[in-house]
Length: 123
Image (cartoon, rainbow, N blue to C red; front, top):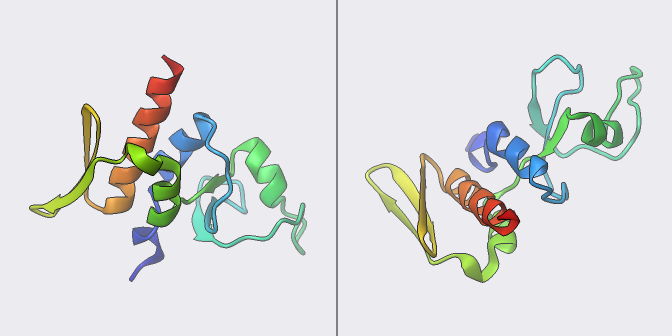
């Protein structure tokens, strides 16, 4: 299985960070070259690597590190707000009270649900 299938998409990871979700996941999207080419890795907490490139701590601050949340990490964030999850016709569906989200994989459906919960909290 490709590791990208285990993590929410970079687009959703970016939204989750903007909404204030603590960037405390096992895996991260990381742009070590700072050129827009992100990879998923379990990166360390150093400030620079052997080649002098900025790493994790600077990346969190400057936008080239984002938590690549897994299904289990998103379940922890959602808690009891999850009503149901279903797979139908090649799509995953995640439901909370009054909202349903669809995605090609379960982790992205859950990430969309977390985003909705957080956006509704701000209202």
